[in-house]
Length: 170
Image 1 (cartoon, rainbow, N blue to C red):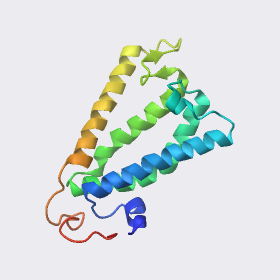
Image 2: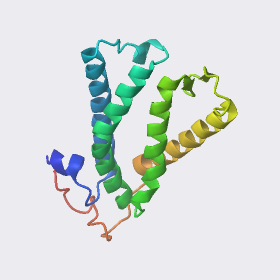
Image 3: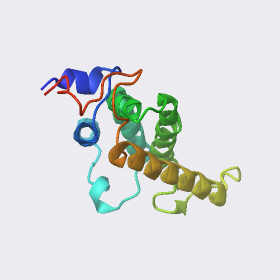
């Protein structure tokens, strides 16, 4: 199996099966890096599963872990969206929104917990909830698009059909 193609190449196309496998490993790697970095700086990583609000240090570590794994996630997503005969520019709002939500986590503005603990009048709760809802809807649409949608049959400008012939890593 050619994992280098799956994780690091931006060319070609992949099937739904390999997209799900790749995304599983990216999520596992991101959380693993985040937990390891938190232990290294002496922070408690149990906030992930104890339903605690993250501190700014937790959010910074999460942003760093995201940035370390973003290239791998992009490589997988780009190949999959090309299999759907769509442009990779559709991934930009998803990745920017995800980075914004991760960065927002440690500022006291946490739409995941539906709390706003700030005195800044520019950070209006309704606006933040609207942003969170928009990113959530877009993320759900991208999961349907990439993870459930059938690829374009036959060859395309992005490469051969991954289901018509053995994939480069099988």
